[in-house]
Amino acid sequence: MQTREPVTYLDNNATTACAPEVIEAMLPCFAGNYGNASSPHFLGRQAARAVASAREKVAECIGCSPPDVYFASCATEANNLVLLGVAHSQSVRRRVVVSAIEHKSVLGPCEALGAMGFDIVAVPVQSDGTINLAALRDAIDTQTLLVSIQGANNEVGTIQPVRAVADIAHEHGACVHCDAAQLLGKVPVSIDELGADFTTFSAHKAYGPKGVGILVERNRVKGVQIWPLQYGGGQENGLRPGTLNVPGIVGVGEAFRLCREHVYGDMVRTKSLRLQLENGILSVVPRARIVAHEASRLPGTVSILFPGVPADMLIARTPSICLSRGSACMSGTVAPSHVLLALGLSPDDARCVVRLSLGRYNTPGDVQAAFRCISNALEDSPEPESSQPLRQVTSVGFTEEPAP
Ligand code: PLP
Image (cartoon, rainbow, N blue to C red; front, side, top):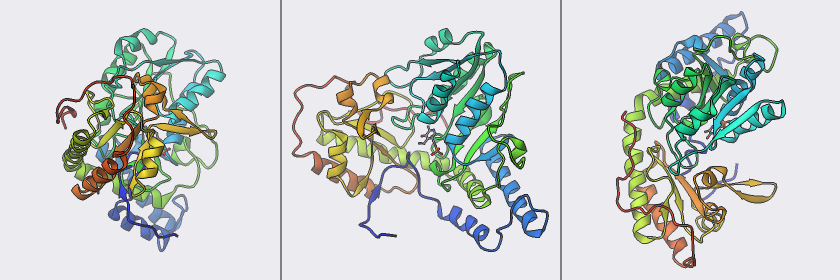
């Protein structure tokens, strides 16, 4: 592997470093304890016990029972399994309702369902990124099978009122999926409090390994279930067959255990670092704007619009910081993010948004380094002639996180 200059990592919403404790827990599964969890012999039984223990740790962290927990290969797979699996399980209800700012791993299967004749309704969000509950009520009818709402947005960090959405959906007999990939490790998560029938997570967003997704099923709606999308050896109760990724699953167990232990401390630290970063940048670049600043946001996530400065240019000028742009590269062209457009930004402004996401291992030194680097990079960038006005940021500490 190539060695490179040290970097300041501020892209924790894309992926997190694997916690050292997670790596330590996984290592024996590659060397001595390499059995197949379905095998009847000693090594197999040892692997099965390790998987059972990981399932218990996941359940303990989020407040459900171990049999509610299924392992998949990533949150994308788990989201597909919920959306397509629920749709295939019945033929009566034909409408699926989502927020307009869902992740592509939800919007993609919705597109596929649309092509199969399902009626897909994308509910608009308000300028702070929260779903418009009045529009949601109007969108749900007696034909609605499933409502899918993310726990928090990966780009701007807005936390959604999942419980309120679930209550509205359940009133109409629809079931609810929550894509909670961005909640875990950043804020405490309780399956009961979310109130969703199906909740999905991604291990690599919460200091676990890449290659494991988690689906939690607590279905309250009769007549609806997830049908498997694959058939094989019957693992995971037949819902997601295939040889279990024992090292990854053991890593997930440890990652969830650590999230439970560290989440409150991580919240306080990342929020404090994020405020230092926001305030520092706003003090030297007053024309910068924080996207969705008035929302209840993830403690460590900030999306900043630097009017007239394309995100790609800023990223090229700050090679020692890992940050992300608010746009997706599709077929060689940079398309403005559907999330930013749904929040009311113009396509030009959406191309000038960068996302910085702090995590457990960031330090005040990282914030200083990022602040210096970004302000130097912006020093000689031109003032734009015009830019769509966003909400003016007037003070620090303007964001509110949900009570722990
Ligand atoms: N959902 C959200 C909100 C995400 O941010 C992501 C990843 O960026 C995913 C789902 C997909 O996660 P995975 O990489 O595990 O497929």
